[in-house]
Image (tube, rainbow, N blue to C red; front, top):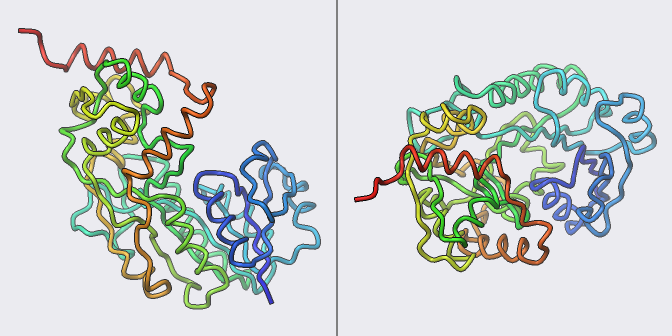
Length: 330
C-alpha cells in the first residue's frame, strides 16, 4: 500500500524536488499551500489551497486525508510546531525540515555530525529552528506521532542562485564590474543540489528507522566561496570574474541583514559527515556537481528576461563596499 504524504508547502526549492521524488516513488502526494506557484507543482501531485496561518482553512484542507506522513517545510518556531502537529493523525510521521545553520557556529570540530550541539549565537533564524526541533521532540510523542528532523545546508536548484547577492552579482560579472566575496574567499562551503537532497530524503518517509531521529542531508562537495563565484561566472560566460574580498564584519556594518546570514552561517567553513543518512540510503552521494548546477541556474535565468532582476539596493551596497575595501588605483 502506497503512502499518503502531505507537504505543508511543497513548491519551494527543497520541497519541490522532494515532492517530485515522492511522486516518482509511487506515493500519493498532496501539497497544501496558497497556490501561488502552480508551475512548481510536480505532475501527479494534488494541491489543496490554504494559508498555513489560517487554522480553519488548514483543517479543511486536511479533511479526509488521513496522511501517513506530514512534511512541514514552512515551520520555523515552536509556535508553528504547535499549530502544525495538531493536524497530524495519531500513528503518522511528522517530518520537520529544520536547518544545518542551527549547528554550533562557528563549529569547534569538523566535520559536523548530528550530535554536534545546536548553538548559533549569531542568527535568530537558526535559534528558532533549534527551538522548533526541541518542541517537536517534546510534543510529538504526546500526540502519538512519530517524528523525524531533517537539516539541509544551502540547498539550491536551477531557480535559486546560492549567493546573497543573487542575479545582481551575475549581471555585474557580465558587465565586467567587480563583485564582493565575503571574507578571503577560501572558506569551504558545502553546497547541495535539491535533486540530490530529495533522493535521500524520500527514503525517510514512512521509514521506522528514522522515527525519533535527526539527519542532515548535504552534498559531499565543498568548494571555496571564490570557486563558487567563479563557477557561476564561467556558466555566465565570464571565466575570470573580478572578485573583491571584504570581511564579513565590514559587510554586516553596511548591511546588517546580509551580515547576520554571514556571521551566523556562511562565513565559516562547514563540512558534514553523512554517515547517518547512509545507514538508510547506503548509496547516497552527490550526483550534480556545482559546476553543472551553475550551468543549470544560468540557463534557467537566461531563458526568460523577467527572471534577470538587478536589485538596485544590492547593487548600491556592492558599489559602496568595493569603494571602501577594493584595491586602490596605483
